Image: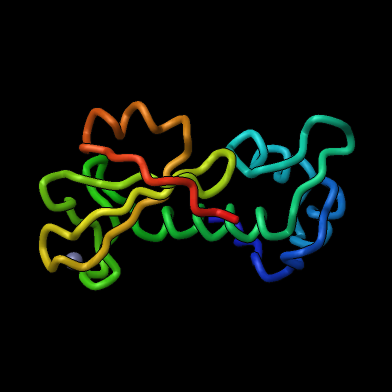
Length: 141
Ligand SMILES: [Zn+2]
């Protein structure tokens, strides 16, 4: 597995272009462009593309968290159980986290703690077929 970039290598409140982000994270510019294609939130309306440090951190954390604990299609991650669990009654609440990412939140069917899962908007359809999804008002400031 390739070395992981450290999310803390970028400043949350700073803005980076592709080359600056690549330099800060010790990856290639091509890697940054791949991340943008994969869902890293970037301001792509004009060039150079600009990326918020906070978006990079969030993207990398979600990416690595998903890789560390692969979940089945019908599971959320329960931090109390430390593993994927089916949500109670397959019910989840969906809230938008970034322009391309949603958070699914449900009750762990095993221990009744809050279980969550980050999904990209591209995955919404697939998860809507699996879970009973209710929408939560956007709470991001
Ligand atoms: Zn649990």
